[in-house]
View 1 (cartoon, rainbow, N blue to C red):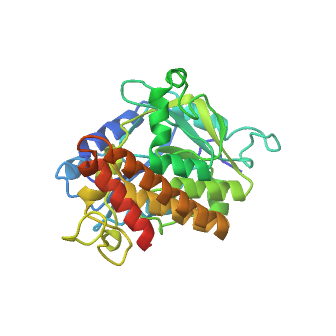
View 2 (cartoon, helix red, strand yellow):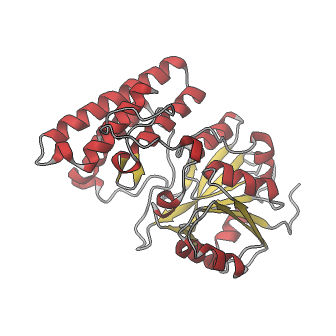
Length: 343
């Protein structure tokens, strides 16, 4: 039974970008119910982080001397948290007034109701960009068609080409039940966490939240986006700064973007594999890792084929554009294709 005065434990993993982390922590001051704020500094080298620690904006400040990655940082905070629920909050996210009350109400529904804490494993915020524009806030688990659209870039292009889609709300933004939601602002019930366990640290850089929501679903618990909880998310701010664990970083290489660079299966340099704020190679590899863990072997093989087919089609499309063959996008896609082939 959840004590009525239990604090919301807020776990904020940070790696550099002290400016965004400060905005995140200051924004939590808008909340009026009891909080337990735990910051996990994952091997930051930003000199601004130490003054932020001394500012006393968090109740607990934990530090990893070397970067261990998002899941490991989050798990360290979760292991020390005493509250209920447990809120994961990216350091590039800013909460708005009333979000704490919305979270508490979502987990206070009487037992036996479809929306009771026993049924709802986690609740997520409606995410907006800093200018207020709606951001993807939750949706369905990846399908084979979705993986092909992701790799080929056709899904993204269609959104801009089809006029009637321009006004379509971002997925999950209307609130309600979703298969999974991003970990940028995700509150997990204490009971659900006890049943499902910590985050999987085997993912390279992405899909930890996808994996966790999948495990919640397998345990019979749902994920809900709260229409009355809005969080401003500087998308990419924490992705750019959160370091990969040292044992998962690709080794430096003099080969081109399509060549293997080490035993991890990653390819190319960080620069070669990065496009539009993402490491495309790590994204595809982590999606395949999710497929291996949560789908049948036949489905996982089809997923691999869809990513490769979509990636090759994308390279062909880029080759028809002026300078497209040598663009940053082409280098990143080629690195991702090579990563999948050598995994």
